[in-house]
Image 1 (cartoon, helix red, strand yellow):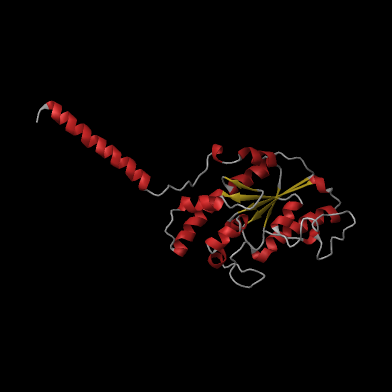
Image 2 (cartoon, rainbow, N blue to C red; image 1 turned 135 degrees about the vertical axis):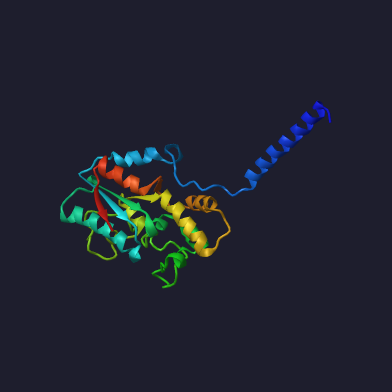
Length: 240
């Protein structure tokens, strides 16, 4: 074999190896993105929350569902601050940092049904008593019209929007919810093992992120967000 033939043969071999490498990468499952960088999420939206001005800025660190009791505590704070202490509504800013089991409350009925969240986390639907196949604590029982709050409204009335402890009801009163990307990545790995799912983690994470409930901001890391909200934002801290 002369030099020209050897070079031609070697070129074909290296080309084949390179092509095989490309095809192998294409056929490999997507690598999970455990850590988001600043350009990969809505950092500006978070900074807007960080620098909001108000007399009372309160951060709830929520990790447990507690049959809706964690959300009810947020409702109680809103009512107590305004009706009990006389703080104007527009001077109250509340953020709920959702991670742990509570993180899954930031995702819609599609996620809860497809991935059997209720059975996995042992969360039961209050209406059926069975493992939840829908997000049981997001939607309000009140229509948009019935949820309108007036000055003459009795805050103690059980059917009042002021006693609405759903996520949607709290959002209507200005509460902001944050979901944790890191927690979601970790939870998806646990879910895959628990249900022996064939998909790779990043495929499921992306599927869930596409079904975030309205007006929830997914942050890169909740424990980091909490530190910034306390240190730079001046939010008081409550863990529930």
